[in-house]
Length: 578
Image (cartoon, rainbow, N blue to C red):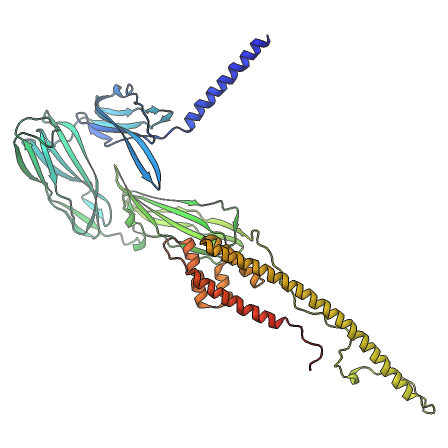
């Protein structure tokens, strides 16, 4: 019975270990993505499916479900390796050339590789394939624009197609250049089709054109120079053919597009004609633990579908008392997709609190023009509330220089101001002389006693002040030495913190929490400039660092002068002036 129980527990432990191993493999599985070069095509056309796994792996996808709706014409696989910021990254790709089997909405199924699953993709198959208007020639070209009328700066997709039913050994197309417009090359793809019942091929090139002025935009005629094989060679044998070639020069038709100015109801700064605009933000740390002097970074990403990154205007953020903003250089990027160009702009702002309390960053609004509905729309980021605390700063209490005033009569006080004693003198008895002498002796005794007591009190006060001064000098010296050590390490963030700590001890003021406060305390323009450079070197990466030698010399001179004045002011004055 014990042996059976032991075997059952051993079996359970192995099962648990196996489940944990499988779970761990799923957790660390790479990412698998699927994409196609075209999602709308004719029944007789072909397209390419690309599977990408973001790790190097020796595996092959299962194409069984894919064969239900598609014929697999060709497959290729390869591994790509790149080094980014010193880190090596590898990925594995599979390219599959496909031809649809029927008309309608077809679904490319999800694939699974090493626990990673790709998304399914819907493909629309139309009854007729694209074919040239003139099918009498073996090689023809055409041009197509997505719009006949557009607004200024709106994206226009220009598509050039070359159709051929014969083998080509070379295709040369001149670059597209449009006056008063920005031109972006989106992609070039090749696929097979049937032209007038004959097998053929299409070379399709697409551009995104952004007109910069209103009026008539002219898409010029484009020149193709094509080398045609004299013999019927393989359709895709386009280069290095051995047979004799014929050179053809083919031109597309010129296209004219009416470009409208921005509507009068839209402000010039709000003109962003796009398919879609969105905004998102990211904070470098939690907003629940903000402290004075400790920076936090806010990154705002603007994405515009149908615009380049250069067309996105910088954000204008209003200043807020108690918060200092440092804008870093914006990051821009253009991604190309089936819809054209998608531009993105990332604004990075370092925020340094200079006061404690509650602050509200206002809502950010970005107006844009929807080119699909021809209406103004607004992308927004909600308002953000910040609570800034004092943190763990040492509260340094400023020592008082007040000295308790003696309650007795000062030694230099005029005795005539003292209320006289009422004394009854009998004129017949000459005792006034004795009484006056007695009073004088009594007053002298009282003054002698208060002088001794005052001297003891002043000596005690002087000793206390001397001890406090020595303690403060020791703290200041330690803070100064720590600042110089940090200066030698050349770590700007630590240098800033050490400088603020020294300033709090040096001026006996715990409210100094920024380099701006130090500059205001010294009222030295040269020192203020070096402190500003230190802040910019920390929070704005493109600015130059301060001259640390100049900064050390300025602070050393300031410290030397302050110590001399403090020493002169703290000397105990003598009771009697000689």
